[in-house]
Length: 162
Image (cartoon, rainbow, N blue to C red):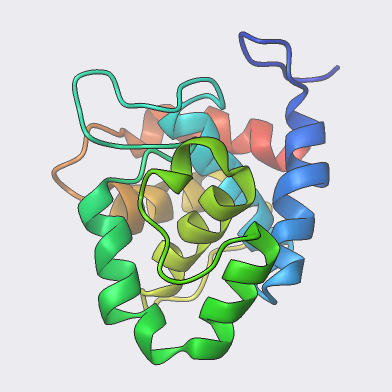
C-alpha cells in the first residue's frame, strides 16, 4: 500500500527520490533524518501546499522567511562547507532568498534538515514515530505552533513506512 497526497504523488517516491539523495548530498542523511524530514513535510503541508494559508511560511516544510534568514545569518554563515553543499545540491548561489523554498524542493529539504541541526539534542530513533513527532513539535514547530505531537504520530509512522 502506498501513501499518496492529494495530487497523487507517492510518498515513498518523495522520500526515496528527493529527500534521501538530497540529505546524503549534504552529508546529513541517515534513516532518522530522512524519516524526520519526511514526517515534517507530511505534518506541515502534506507535500501539497507551498504557501501557508493565512501565514508567511513557505515550501513543503512551511518555513517562515524569518527562520530561513536566521539560519543563514546565525548558523550557515559560520559553516561554509555545509552552506556550499546546500548551494551545490540546490543549484543556487550566494545567500538564497526565502522564496526559493517554494519551487526548489532540494533547497527546501536542506533548510528543513538544517533547522533540526541547530538543536544540540540528538535525533530520535528512526523507527520511533512518537519520538520523531515529539522532536518535530519541540524543535521545528515550537511550543507556540499548532502541531499536536500525539495527533501527528500517525503521520510520522507513515513517513517511516514509506
